[in-house]
Image (cartoon, rainbow, N blue to C red; front, side, top):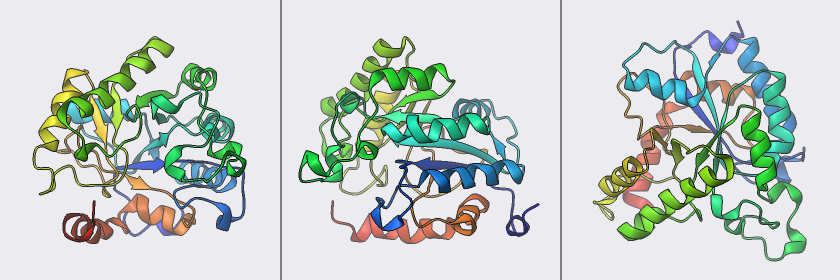
Length: 276
């Protein structure tokens, strides 16, 4: 066992990735990106140190059916639908036989330009690493056994939208993915990091859950930090984001619980200090 594992090795963790570019210079990466080489080191670390890496739907099924979940269980997820998920992450996932879920901002799939929230001033600034997949690449991911989930239609900040618009973002993305792949997605991930309940949007949680249930979704991932326990609500799943500053030591800290304390300052900041 790796010496970093010894202190606390019993956590159940969902990891959240975004872009997996070929770049090796961390100064050139977005904050939530992980280079291809670093991603492979992290996946190798999971396998070498006997982590129980399972599909998201297996975790959700265990939660729904109140089944015991093994210690050191990990789920791999990707948000947005970057082309690098296909070109760089998939070969690593296949090499180590690791299951994963990719959440798509469906309205941007097939658009040959970088995602708009990256704020690149012109198309000349946009590299292939910053663009979304096309539907052929998504289909190949799906055929390789990767679960495809919904990440809304247009990656909007949902709490500030009205009921109908929230429902449209959640259900339209699902319908498009089903049309393209022939399977209705049952997993959803919220864009951006924010509390599901906040004094500024007291009704959002119920609107969100109603829309998800209307679509027949089985789970919802957030970007709130934390780990999974047996009592976790499948529609309020916490995750640990992995980014460009994570080395194997910090990666392991996020797996084993030694980073979980940051959920408290995150909660305080988001509830009382952050301007939405």
